[in-house]
Image 1 (cartoon, rainbow, N blue to C red):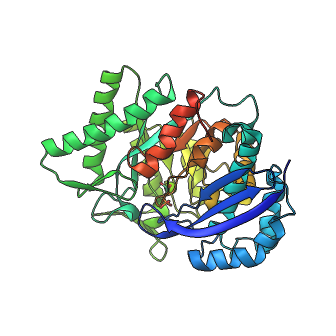
Image 2: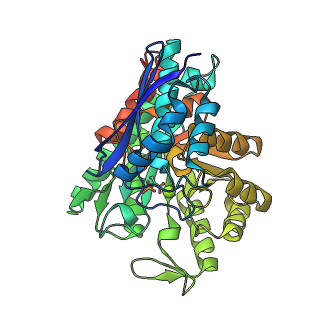
Image 3: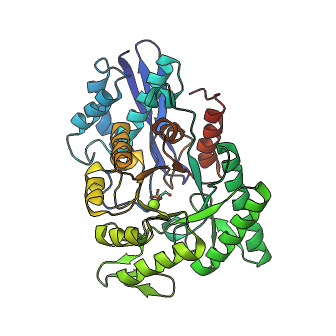
Length: 403
Ligand SMILES: O=C(O)[C@@H](CO)OP(=O)(O)O
Ligand SMILES: [Mg+2]
């Protein structure tokens, strides 16, 4: 164990070209860790608060850094994270910013791993982790808040369930992404990319379903293993609270109709995964849908749970969802994120570790997924900030990760 000797904070760019917080943590014995905060676009109402990066840095320098330097052992992650919470003094990190908090929390973990000379996943998960890799969910077509004039559903995700290893799974998702491009070109549909690198064509959801199904089938044939697909509906973004309906491109759906629609999609397309099919306040709707299709697909809560154990407890009581998306910056620290994973697993909910739409080259979530034995990770299919995590998973699988 070794004390934090220095915490430095700076602004850097994220993948959208926005400023974000980067933290460096040094230890008395010469350990070093660096990490950066990601940032959402379709953020949940109940997420921890991201402050303007310059304010977050100023506030963390004033309140958190003096409580860490020379006082906290870097290997005691819970103490690092407790100290961040105490320095902040609010429930939602609105004083120092969840962006400062998560950057420091992750940088401290990396510094501790550096001191140990172990990969980060081993420091976080122990000596018996690393044998199992998560299945990557790869975003291949998308719209919603991530791209203008594209699909209403935010993400169509390739799910290579039959891949024998993470390297083949990562390559398969990239191949599906390429195949989608070719199928769009065959139909003379031009497409730029959304924030996460997924194709963002101006087509309706029905056409996207056809194309993604054809792409996953064709790549599955080539690779010789099963590839299914899934969705992030991000339904909170399409829910009109006044009219109590979900607003699609050309149609609207009541809550009952939305549940019926998603259940039909699950069966028609044999969906492996459906994230946020209903509004972030609708535990009841999530429970009803889970009752209908939870035996054959993952119903995942992102904006519903926001990586928050209290919200997950409510979901567990009501039978809402059978899976949770875990984003460390939604809650502010690695300890809180790990608590959410552990509570989920104890209650039969599958954890899915996830990136944000605004990302950096930081690879912490790849290590977190392996460290917690999470069965899935959602971190895109292409694009440097996405492949940073995917390539790290390949290195971890081959035992050559240097972090
Ligand atoms: O909704 C989501 O799951 C995420 C990541 O894909 O998007 P954002 O970071 O914009 O919230
Ligand atoms: Mg989501």
